[in-house]
Length: 335
Length: 264
Image (cartoon, rainbow over all chains, first blue to last red; front, side):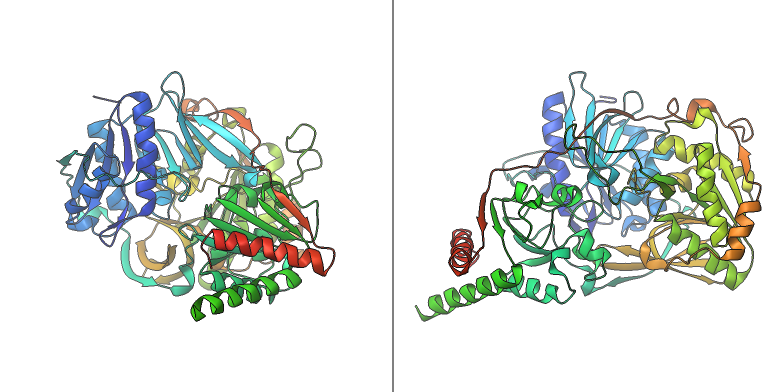
């Protein structure tokens, strides 16, 4: 069973599996079925074994549980030691991580330790005719896509961008095994001490999980334009997004940015207002189910990806849409 | 404090133009610049030096031309520069780059702090900083937005999803920093004069006793096997708003879509 199976890092925080872990589990399942092998999930934490069931229901065949009070919250030293021990013992063929602040810290550290390759922020994964992992990712600001392989070193490792892979529907009839794996961790080797963890509301823009996103770009012409964007988003129960141009102009914070170096989103509905559609923005939102674009310039690239394009002044169109939404809501409340 | 700052020279990609005929990136006339995110690590280094004294050494791996980036860092206020340049370094992936930088850092010991930009804007991986920390066995803070020194330890604010954490790291340590850390300053006239005159050290694999089986393309576990252009087009309906009538039509169209989507 050496160098055979597909593994994922089942990132958990506060006793909850992160959504991206389920997404890469879905990807791992597809890859493993192509390679005819098993999917393992590495679950690290303190008293986390009860989370294994959910991983099995989302596609894992085996869950390797490493429990230790020193793994309760993420520290780069303890988690690197634990994942390194797993790799040395189980010799995975492929190992995937979510490209979160944890995965992007942990994976390169592990790759250096075990001397293997790592591809950052993948948006596509496949298996070639030789059974090798094809890792597809944007480069040069999303202007170019590259396919990368790791022919010799093992495991073949990649971080995967949140919001890109499809997670499998929960299947309560799936069964799998839990493997308890013991790693001797030494407190003295954990040099980075966490003094404090602070939640900040302004950093919790959840674009990846939003069903509706209303985004603004440089075509708003002024930072105040985002008030109108927010009004429309609120009327629809959606979230505010932004193009890099708007963020770089200082009109809105970078948590709202969609596209390369920002977030990849695929909501049910994406409304792009005053966004011309730089390729890196398109790469970040073109997976949306339905796309509406409002822009003055009929030649704006955003119209190439839009299901509904409106060539016109967003300051005329959006207020009318908001009025109509209010009318529709009033009408339904009368009934 | 002795601070080492690894930097990279990158193509200016913020306004990349695509050739509509071939669908490839237009490389002609593309300027080489200092990786914009490295300006933040340089700024932090200079601020720490101003506060606590010491020296800053900038290091870059690249062709001879990359010394332009090093000179720019000197002009901003860094003290010394080393260029790692050798045909054996060409084509390096993030592992081989981390290894080559590690050999340079070992030669530059002792140091208190290595500061890296979050990532370079060409490769966009953010992997070299953590990879370098692992090979050097250094404590690490990534996505760092603030730094203070306290009792010989580094107190680092690390941005995470939905908030931040405050870490304490013993020195020597490695931090990668995000834009929030500081606003980079412009080069000074005196700095520019110094940058012009400074003799930049050039180190080869041999100078650093680096194993060339671990450097450059040969030392890279990963291979780029194909590049292509992202395809995103779909067939859509376009409405041009020319007057009141077409405006109403456009709004109607959107409202029926929203109803269909059960958004209202």
